[in-house]
Length: 341
Image (tube, rainbow, N blue to C red; front, side):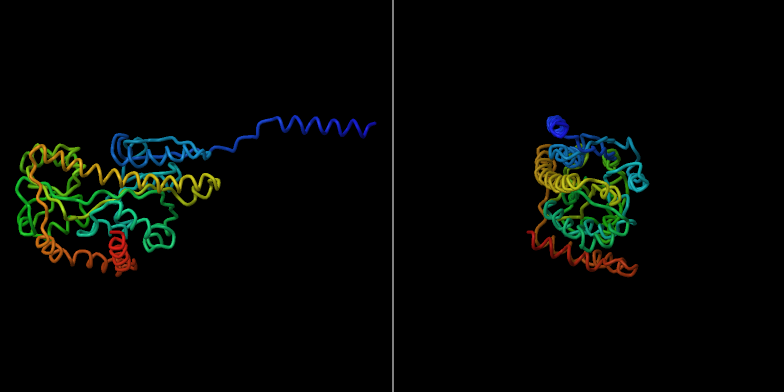
């Protein structure tokens, strides 16, 4: 009888247990930081897409989002993340060229026209086993999630710029880095300044023109002071990388790891699609405002390539001299861009 009662009791306990909800998997909270406002295209069409995709996947991940430098300035975010104060941050290459030198291949002139092609090539080189991953990412213990490659840079100016000779003596705004060397190589005077300063400098004649995307040209209303632009030649590019530490990545469940990685690809593709369409729309808008946009001819392109050919090769050689595989990164990037055309 005791045996029967015991079985009944066990059956009762099992029945009650089966009727109870399964304990939810512990949720991971990730602190995400951007140096840009939520309205900026990098956030709206990139990082926010990433967070939404992770959430939609059902993975046990929640976010605390700090846009517009709320958690730190652009040049502080990497250090804050590696110190553990933040979990996922946007890394703008322009602020960290010395720490991620191989990513500078994106800044070289005459490379990519299509940002989706550029992003695909960079993902190949910056994923595990790739030359940029092994040289710039793995030694720092980082885990890249998404690569937001900007539309290629054009010129917008107060006077017409059709070819290499038109840069002579002109004061052209750059963001520094390879573009600064580029302007100097073409006989111009490179002036480094932030994007918000360009409009006032153009209107005062402090600078004659600027190198940047049409997305930014529209955003900063440069059509009010500049009447000319170029199309059909890449004067370089830029990239923002969404990244976390490998240390933090390894604390995630397998489900969460898969979700943040898959969302990274989704956000990257969403941003590059926006970059293509948005830049074309911005260029059309600039034309409507009276900006004359010159399509670089094949002859002008060949002349620019000739004058700027040594820039990328010198960049690669300098990295090789300090033990970084610059020549390999450059050759592989060019090959991937060509195969993706």
